[in-house]
Image (tube, rainbow, N blue to C red; front, side, top):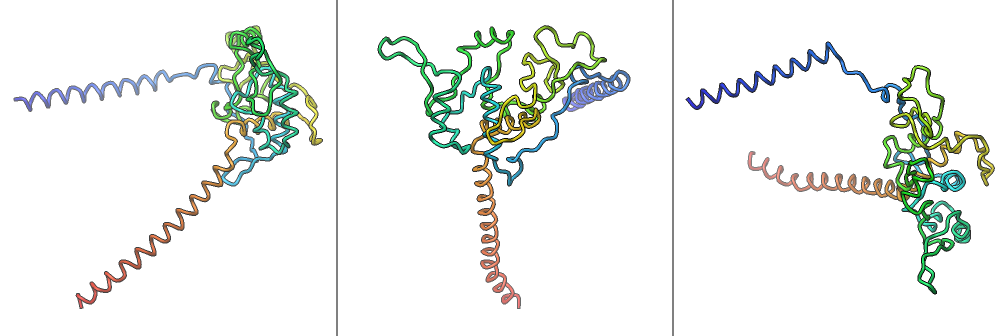
Length: 284
């Protein structure tokens, strides 16, 4: 009797499952879901390559220095690099004196304490300091940016889907809204249309607006595309400065595993060769 009721209950739940699945399938076919407006007009990141891409990729220090220059002259007034110290710039090929000069002449001073009074003050950064925040806190940041808080850029290429290509696409993607975009989704006051941004409308105005907005010290033509690509490459480095060392370590580990596998196989052949020979003698 217990088994009989158990079978009935099982059949009941199986029937409900089949019914629910069938009803959902019919509903999907007769009334298919429609994408939200944001998804209809949203675009995937552009195809763009960087010197650090791929298993054999390496950082191009000249490009990283150009990207740092774009960050300094275009982005640093709003976006911080709280996880990067000035001395880390030596990894980009800057000399010790150049790093000291960059820190001492940075556009924002570092918060400090006046030793004689104990009061809060500021001082020029030194190489050991992290890049100072452009705003004292989120309230000040929002007040200066139409209630939008500019994100820190230290890890931005790892924190955003699409990585560096997304950053590049965002910087070069500002355009006028298409005519077919519904009025409710058009940018309001203080917002700007960008199809690469999640909800299409971003508070940040286009930061790179014209060619030669910066003057590269190496003589490279500062086109909008070039500046966007260079600063995106720089932000790959800020997010993962040890990327190339990790790749080199990975290749070393693969080589070790390959050699270890070969040695293990040869050991297997050597050890079992005697066993097989002995077994054949016994069979004979």
